[in-house]
Image (cartoon, rainbow, N blue to C red; front, top):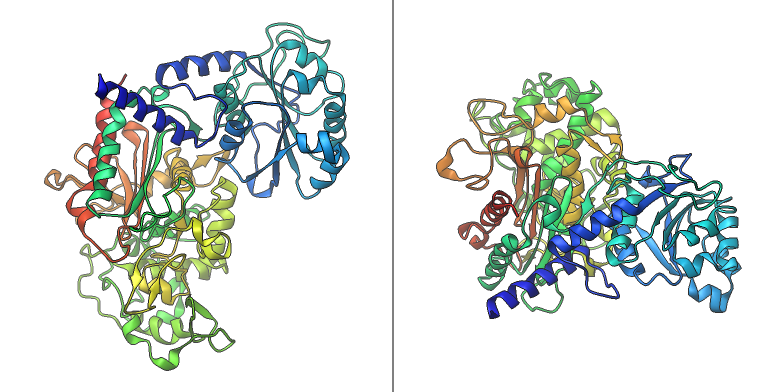
Length: 605
């Protein structure tokens, strides 16, 4: 009996962490949640969507505010909105009661999209209706209405903005409506009754599911209780000092069914890990940034996999790198050395504690590298490095450093800017990117190594990788930071064969090509790591299918996509804090969690 009570408590905590919200009552769990969600879906209708504003598109252009008045489940609603885009939350009662509704209009000056939550009492408030009527003439407005049909009738005359209406009032209906705004769930119903002349039976607009949904495991055919072993493995990782903390995310069938943070930023146990925390994802950069750009350039005919480096960078002519093909770089079969010398080569005259025109490249706090150091020193080391293993598989950071130079030569745009503009911002990836300290507070960024030999500081917001650090923390091999939710979005796009949110980012045939084994000498795809056909290796896990692709990162990270199971698995940690440990690997924490996911899936409900 005690064990059952503990399991129920664990399930509740899991669901609470999945939605990361503070509701007026505990959310339902398991099949009860799915039953309520089905009832909500059957009662939810979209009206006034002739301009097809819903689901919201072009997220990189939107500045969104969410306003609530007396909706008791606004916290859950707003929490779900913020899974898709940055949405500022405004309590409308502060204006109706004290400041005045006109002040609210003034305070919305910088927003172009306003989401307004209403219940029956709000819909009967002329002050609120007048505010919506005025605002919809100036900005995109979306109304989420909860309550009986008479509340809907109150909106029929003056409100022309899209209205998502459901009769059901519950935490689940709040979650559902918020997700419907972004296409995380589909709207499948039309009005069953007539409530006003322009809201008559059989009216309504239907939408498709185009983004991730956030729900309970049972919604994807998985029993929540069968996922509890993940808890034990993650806590084992922390108890054995394999890592101070971690975040685990599981998405199946386009639905995030598990997302939980464990442990703390560091072993002092002061700051708990959160779902929104930003991790140094190390070599996941290779596939999450560099390979993404290469795939898009390949789609555009700007990169030919069988062209040589010299075709894009003439300065390599005369070196042993000139005739290396792009395909060889992307499969780690170019014969390149694993890495080039890093901090050992830096001379005292090469760096300064202050930035200036002569020392513009910031490596870390109080460490600025001299101008042109990369081209004068690092690039020359790359060009002079030997090719001893060409045609064999030797994993090399240098390959992706070269791919960055090739891509930037083609686009005339730095890698960090390209992926931000072409992928992360339009996809709604709110934290992903290079140089996170320019955009986020230190408290949101997970610390990595206490670097006692090179930068002589605890690294927070600066890449742990030394090569990438000397490139100004922007490199093709490392330097990217992200949250688990961001990576789930990016790799759901890849699992969708390049499509997400109604936009095609990469052609399906290109995704198939890059995520397919390329040669007989390694398991690798193009950029992507793959399932190992040597089953004795159990890589990436014992139960992963041969279709699986993804990558791992030195800081203790991984992303694996398994099309057979329609699965995205994200694990983020900082196992290098305060110094490197192999326990995460020796205890097989990442693959054991992955296997626990497969076991839960195959057991079903």
